[in-house]
Image (cartoon, rainbow, N blue to C red; front, side, top):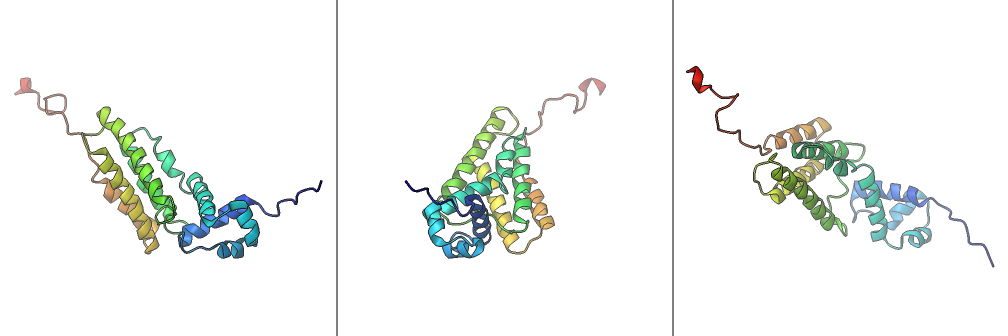
Length: 198
């Protein structure tokens, strides 16, 4: 019984190169031939490992989410909804203004629309908790989540259009100036006039 040929390349290295190519050019702008040229791994070996361009993209996307875009998962661990929103928009500004401008998840690749929608719903669930805790007013949390997602996506597009990191963080700050807050309690108290002193 013959011994199988040892693998001649590191799949993780191919995933990393593919991630950067997809990130820079988008799904439609990258071919398997581009990956072959960038890695030196022949097409047959790439297809044997990944089966299709779609599967290669899926693995590259997972690598992106665990690496450059890990700020998204980290943001959801922040103690307040405002902190979550802050970490999302400023995390986006940092990520999309690095060596490669833009965002891998802003595009039309297979599965991206579903991924973006799932992220919006995760944000909305976090904001639901904030409303229940009295941290946020009674707002449409799904709409609020879509707003934060739209700001992040807009920041990515502005980065591709030439906005620098400082500008992107300024955009993030300006967006958060519209963050909904709970109205102060109108009943007289420590912060209001003391009726006994008049």
